[in-house]
Length: 359
Image 1 (cartoon, rainbow, N blue to C red):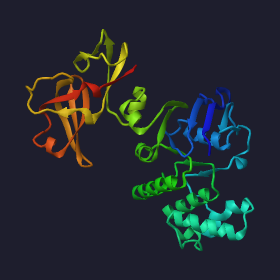
Image 2 (image 1 turned 90 degrees about the horizontal axis):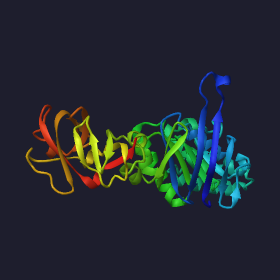
Image 3 (image 1 turned 30 degrees about the horizontal axis):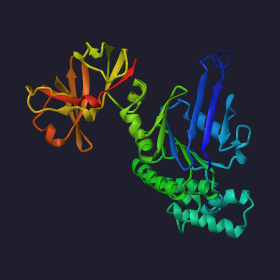
Image 4 (image 1 turned 45 degrees about the vertical axis):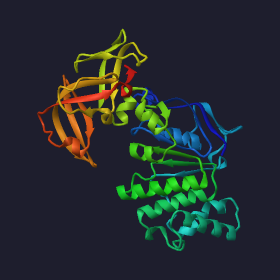
């Protein structure tokens, strides 16, 4: 597929008069998705991810805006003529059809010959790891296997775009991980363009070339996982990505001041003036040996009192009270040795790892 361009598309549901509640509005979305890209829409439930996906699929009609695939305007093209495929949270397989017939159904609608349908369906079942399962029925498969069939059915017709709406959320954690690996491999093998909706940060980070963060009908920021994590555009994006250390303060005359934490240090690289949030990623806070170690150029030291220390996936999460705030840092097992609640510790952060956003 050529580049997919979403040009200022917007959608509003209902009104105060009709529902008695504030209307939900998908604010204008302007977005380009490259051919062969794996693009994820990430955000909490009700933020507009699925609405945008359905607008792209043609299952909803936009109030304003346009949709283009290369030089082709798809805005008024019916969904069945867009050559897009969609995979939902539930596999939605035909229970009276065999697995092979389920996968081949779209090809039958395209008037492909029986021999071609069977050959392509079997080939796609092999791609998703279900070779030899073609004569079974959906009720003879596990949930993960059914979702593999749904994926094969979507891909067998060679769609120009694959749309996926939380396809793995109903699976248990081990199956979700397995399906992520499978989808990532197949997407690269086939070079298909994917738009993937999820509320799971780990899932989006694992699979995506780029991610769009959504909240309350607004596309807040688009970037790679690394760009979003290291340079969130707003405190809201940082919070949704799981960052805990968001410190309110003010930048004036090249210095950042946060009375709640007792911070006052140079902020020449912030590029901001006025009310701002300082964002400190947990892994950038380093535990120093000895409370008297001096600061050096390019590094900022501060003291705090340990409030909690918990083991978490091979590392320790340490909560440290600094002034009136609690900051979170990540420690290795070796660093965590000898530290306990109530200890005063010295933390340091490189100035290049500091990030500010406007309030």
